[in-house]
Image 1: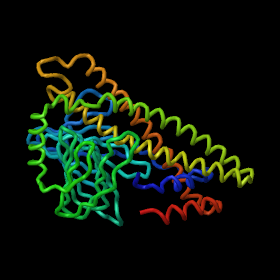
Image 2: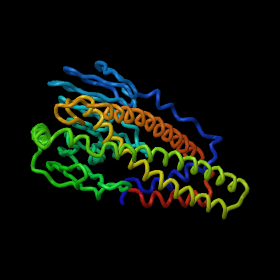
Image 3: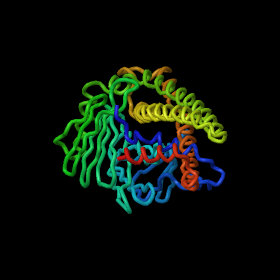
Length: 376
């Protein structure tokens, strides 16, 4: 399994073992909006995380992590994520502003429809990710488009630069496939549970129209609702696992600090190795959680807003679908809060390391050299 940022754990380990006494608290992320609506033509709406009501999203609307934004027929919206990322939503599209990864990489979940992303280089490469139910597209300064269909498939087309597309393996507990590099003028298509393959179609509107027709022809209810309950159970299990891993990590960090203050270098190294293993496991669990998160939020939106999904033709949806949708909404809010709190703690660790670099121990310096040597 290959994960982006696989050397992050050793960096975070070095961060976490530095005394925070001289550290300055980073600016509260809640003071900065995750995204801002820069353009709204036609029907543009947003829904806060945990809310039920969709509201108009005029120019200047500030969006937070977990918020959904959608466009209606013959409508368009443009969002800014910081100073270097702009995304444009086409008509009949829905996206989620997602919690950044552990390393701070911003991301958006493309639930349905298509978006065009422009990522400026600025003073250096700036990573950005677009997640769909079936794949993740990662970039470092480029112009590309991602389309997500009702059946979970996606299409990524590149206009400038290059994009690495990684498909999600079908099995539980697995990471992404080997990334496929897509250069300007090329496109990659990924079926839900499949592998990325080069596509001839570069027009996302035509591709979405064709996929929608096939989806309806094969039977929309079965295609959209298949495996949802099983993956929801896996999602809830991962949340519990992440909570336990975090508790064990905090305990290991506490013991490492005690050993360091007492000058017990061997015990300190043992606790440091334990922390490294826990951080690795935490990163893997968080990756799979993000993968299932986008899948479930997309299915939830489709089931709640497109008629006939998750039910047999001519029959009512029934209480079972309502219960599953309520569970998805409830566990989604819980996951957003946990991931966001974890990120804030890691930011504080990073701030502490930057302000205390001269006091690093030999082991901490070695961890940082190792991480820098292996990063890509």
